[in-house]
Length: 163
Image (cartoon, rainbow, N blue to C red; front, top):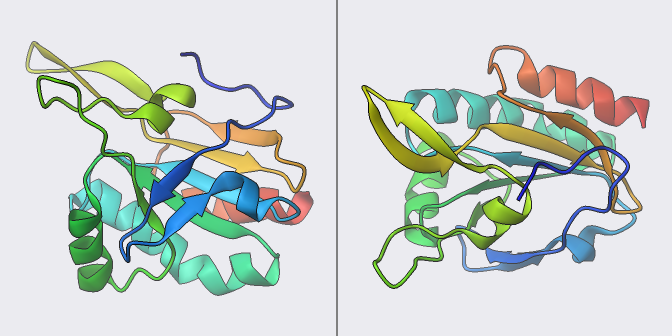
């Protein structure tokens, strides 16, 4: 599926976090939601991005915004990641697999971030680092594609404040 453009309704979902709690997007209606998709727990770039959002979390809360992160590894991996890095916001597991035991993430597909990638000539499916800002009415207010990590969380916070 393609990426969701600003102004469109964000697809609802229900996913489990690192503590076994299920989060549904529609539960946050009336509140802005920062939804960032990251490739893999405990890798250098993903750790940097996650920690930047954690560092700004009090400011996101003051702006009444919720921060949710999604990747394809299971809740157990998310728990290790959260505990190791001190992450206190929900890390959601879009960990569905197909009959061949390969990742088949439903929410990542809905949001258009499950894409073909290539490394050293090898093609594979993975998450394109993408962030969505969803407004209080559940519509996409802003989208960041091919996220460059340095300064990204601050840019998202500025966009939240501008809502």
